[in-house]
Image (cartoon, rainbow, N blue to C red; front, side, top):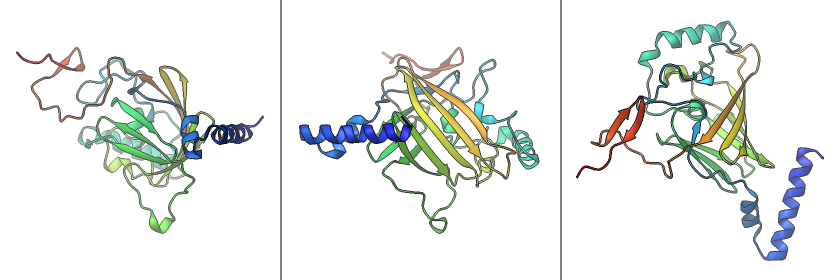
Length: 248
């Protein structure tokens, strides 16, 4: 049975359940969606308050030092490294927010999935059947324009119009604003989500670039707290950001 056939069969099954139980189609669809509640962090990335991983931890997979850059892409990558320390923004932007040290959450609804990280970066992935806006109604933005659909328990995301990261964000792949991203995200265990991101960008890449990412449930966190880190209980211990006990 094909994936499309499986999805159609699943949808019809939920519709039948809805009719028999009096549940509205929208509510039935909501009940069929996966539950990715909790706080998630990129697997293998541990960072201090600076947002940079300490020496010895794995590099960001989306940095792209050894991936299929063409001549233009390689030149842009070297220029990005040359200005590495000067490139810092208030947040991560796409695609780096999907491979950063910042914890994030998934909010799944029938018509839209939101991906939100602790820096208040927000991705809107519309799953209500709409397409990307027409060229004349669309411009490059920090997070691009994302539409998606569900194939069983897999969220498939199509993203375009991502603003040139080399001008705004540190440690971002120096892709062009014509880059096209396809992500396939699914939960593979109670504490693990996996994603396969395929990037096409003829301006900077000699072939499609496939990146495999994973997220693990953050232990000890039950909510996201937004702060500017300028309070008297912020502390870094052994390279990790922590919160001191309240003062007496």
